[in-house]
Every structure is written in structure tokens, then in C-alpha cells.
Amino acid sequence: MFAAYSAAINGNRVLLLEKNEKLGKKIYITGKGRCNLTNDVSESEFIKNVVSNPKFMYGAVFALSPEKTMDFFENNGLHLKVERGNRVFPVSDKASDVTKTLQNVLIRIGVEIMLNSEVASIIFRESSVTGVVLSEGRTIDCDSVIVCTGGVSYPLTGSTGDGFKFAKSAGHSIVSPKPALVGAELQGDDFRPLQGLTLKNVGISVFLNEKCVYDDFGEMLFTHFGVSGPIILSCSSIINRMNVSSLILSVDLKPALESSVLDKRLLRDFTLNNAKSIYGVLRLLLPQSVISLILTRAKIKEKTKCAEITREERCALVSVIKNLKFKMKRLRPIAEAVVTAGGVNVKEINPKTMESKLVQGLYFAGEVIDVDCFTGGFNLQTAFSTGFVAGKNA
Ligand SMILES: Cc1cc2nc3c(=O)[nH]c(=O)nc-3n(C[C@H](O)[C@H](O)[C@H](O)COP(=O)(O)OP(=O)(O)OC[C@H]3O[C@@H](n4cnc5c(N)ncnc54)[C@H](O)[C@@H]3O)c2cc1C
Image (cartoon, rainbow, N blue to C red; front, side, top):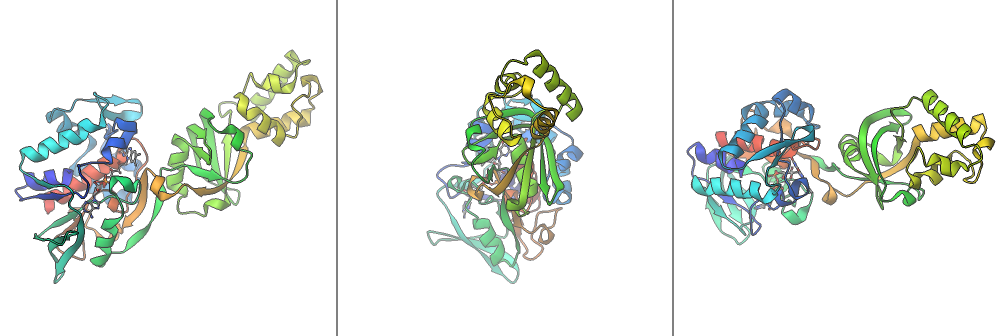
């Protein structure tokens, strides 16, 4: 939609082909239905949140920055608000208003929109685009095509990887798609009683052969398959090219307390409550559902009286509370991932124009490109910025 807008205001006759019955189906489910459409940060801060190929994004983000994007929406009647972490939402809290705003702009500037119109292939002649073929068989002539077909995540919204097929047919290489911003499954069963537990202000570290490959601080949760929540989603974007089943996730339940301080705190609690069971006393410090697992890992019986806890047992407890370890199994499937990492190889796209370096008149924008970002509105902004540049140059 942004690519069509940009191409139209630059004097082109534009046809937007959408295979769904309506525009922007994925937008409706973004930001839990509220659409976190961008992040109110500078261009350089933005780039820090691009996980794959940040350098490729430089030109596009400077061409259409978050600030310019916000101006665009405000000027077209969508009032915005900035929330925690500079996340930008419509004041109405309705993702549908974002789609409506874009659609209204497109209609006003004369973009022709064809719904229920699936592109089957792109026609090339002597390394130039000459048209597209629709699935129903019709051919449409054109001198430029902007492929904005998304990745392969949440395919029910329309992103079924068609763009990868089109890119391949033009000779492009595709960096193999991987799930990003997705939960992770854990090995074993001992995490299962923790299902539904949300942990705020915890630290996580991920180890490969005892080397830390990722660490973060924030909120996570346990689910029926393993772990999810903001810091796990971010982590998935980094570990998705690793052998996940070799990784160890270590959760620090008390990151604000150094081990020695935590040890003193436990000693004090145990002394004050020496006739009570350790299980009851740990409830002062930890969520109830995690206590059994911690005591099992520290090899302490739940009914043990605090007075009976040895120094070694206390050390073991501190160690488990600061390093609650789980073997990872795999990331959840790509269809469940918030974004697709991988896609059309950026080495084959001109970052100043988004044009293919292989075929004249062929452009790419959005998630179909091998660029993915952390959460916070950066992925939609990437789609807007690359779409804006592609439209301007098409
Ligand atoms: C649950 C969820 C929540 C998210 N929340 C946020 C958020 O709050 N903030 C954020 O920044 N990002 C969020 N994202 C990510 C963001 O939605 C995507 O990165 C963004 O939509 C990508 O835009 P796109 O235009 O490249 O692709 P899409 O939005 O996937 O759009 C591609 C379009 O192309 C159409 N299409 C595909 N193939 C064809 C074909 N052959 N012919 C015709 N049409 C075709 C599809 O039907 C679809 O409408 C979220 C994603 C999910 C799944």
C-alpha cells in the first residue's frame, strides 16, 4: 500500500493487485489488534533494531523515517500516540484505522485497486519486466512491478511466499526463510507445571557449548510448548540460524540480586522462619509455581525445615535461582512466527531504489526482502520505508 502510494504521487499509473478480499489483512492482527505501526526513534536508533542486514536499510529509513511516517498518518487523519518503548499506535487503538487510512489515501490519489486478484507470475523479456499474469489467466502489461508479497508467516493473511517464487523466476537467490519473533519449545517435561507463568524483570542467557550467544532482561512466559514473551521473541531472531536443540536457556529469576546478596537474603529469611518449611518460605521470594522445580533442581525436599538447610543446600538454591536451566528443542514453526527472517538476497537489490540488480523494472519491498527487525513497530516501518523507496523509483 505504501509502495502504491509512493509510485502514484511520483506520477505513475498504479495498479495494486491483492489476492485477498480486502487490503492489509495482516495489519488487522498487528500489535494485538492495535497496530504498532512504527517506533518514534531517530534513523540511527532504528537501524540498531534491524536484525538482518541493517546496512541495507540505511537509505530507506532515511528516505522515509519513523517521523515522516508519523507525519504521513497524522496528515491523513490518523491520530497517533506514543507508548512505552517509543511504540506508536493509533489513538483509536484500532489496527483497522491504519488500513482504512492507507486505503482512503490510495483511492483519493487514483490508485486502481483490484482485490481477489492473485498474481501467478511476472513476465520478463530481455532482463526487463513487461507484465504480470493473474491466476485467472489474464495478462496485465506494465513496465515496473513492485513485489510486496510478505514472507511466509501467518499464511492465512495472504503471505504464502509467492514473492520468493517470483524472485527465483527472475534469477534471484533466496536466503532460506527462518522463523523470527517466535516462541521456543523446550526439551523434557519439567517446565510443564510452569505453563501460564509470566516472569517480569528476569534475565535470560542462551549458551552454545558454554559460550553465551544471547542475553537479555525483561518479560517472558511459560507456555504448553516451552517459552515465549518479549525477551524470548527477541532471542528467537538471533538464534534462528543456530542449531537450537544444542542451546541451553538459563533464566535468572533474581537478576537484581548478586549471588552473595541473594545468599544473605535467603539466610535471613531462613533464620527468621527456621521452624517453617522451605517451600513456604520461598514463597516470599518466588512465584509459587516455580518453587517445586527449583527445590527439585537444588535437591532439597519441599518439607525440609529452614533450620535444617545446610550451607551447601543454600548455595545450590542460589545457583538454581540465578541459573534455572532448560535445554531448548526448536523454535515454533515459521507459520506461527511474527516475522519471516530470510528472503530475497539483499546483495541482489539496489538499496537506494529497491530495484533488482538482475531485472530492470522489478522492485521488492517489505518482508519479502531478507530484512527482519525486533518488535516495536520496526517491521511495519521497514515495509513502509522500502515500499516508499521502491514506489519513488519505479
Ligand atoms: C501477529 C502479528 C503481529 C504483528 N505485529 C506487528 C506490529 O505491531 N508492528 C510491526 O511493525 N510489525 C508487526 N508484525 C509484522 C508485520 O505485520 C509485517 O512485517 C508486515 O505486515 C510486512 O508487510 P508486507 O507488506 O511486506 O507483507 P504482508 O503484510 O504480509 O502483505 C503481503 C500482501 O501481499 C498479498 N499477496 C501475497 N502474494 C500475493 C500474490 N501472489 N498476488 C497478490 N497478492 C499477494 C497478501 O495477500 C498480503 O496482503 C506482526 C506480524 C504478525 C503476524
